[in-house]
Length: 293
Image (cartoon, rainbow, N blue to C red):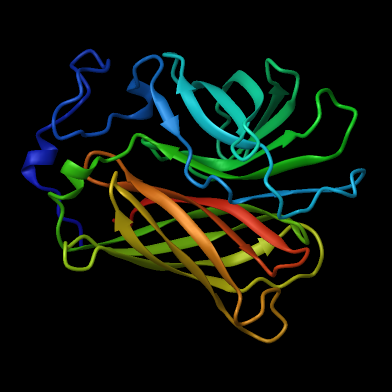
């Protein structure tokens, strides 16, 4: 069930001519197409990445690496500046302006500091407030190495705490997963979320299921989501394994999830995930979706 208070429904942020207007109090998000120039879209999931190692034996797949920190709106619909850096080492990998690809498509380029990058969009063409997908960035300048880091990203025009507090009852969401496995390459699947917006619980649960990799014969477990709503319209929690004999993750392995609610009435969601067996297998990625009407 979805409850959309009149106080939210009446607070539209798109003017009659389709442009952005001043942000009201409480904050209510605008469609991404109406973001003002230089709007900062912070990416959830710092640290939920992976790295490959081919020619550098000192690099661990669980070690910190470059991250996609944020997108900056240029004022042109669909065009953003991506900002890459390593949070632990305070190393900058630069910025690059690009046009966000359509669902399941990718875009590649080079940052202003000379690092190759790729951004792959999740299957989310119908979403209005949400961007999610995968990124990679080379660890060395130029294109002379196959050593790179990557992960999922999720960013948004977020709902805001004031608007989120006006919601009550429960809501169901459906969406898609896109990920990268160090065993099975690109992985896609489905997502279902159930959210209780009542202040006493603020619970988010659901699953990531029907996971299929593009290489190898690995069988993926369903991943069970248990999370809690936090300030700034966010949620974070854990991923537990729905164990079955022969699946790629063992019964006691556990991952992380962090994301948020987007749109004036939390109509959409997005999050990044990471789960590992503690050895060589890491699955990272992003989920996004909307109300199950």
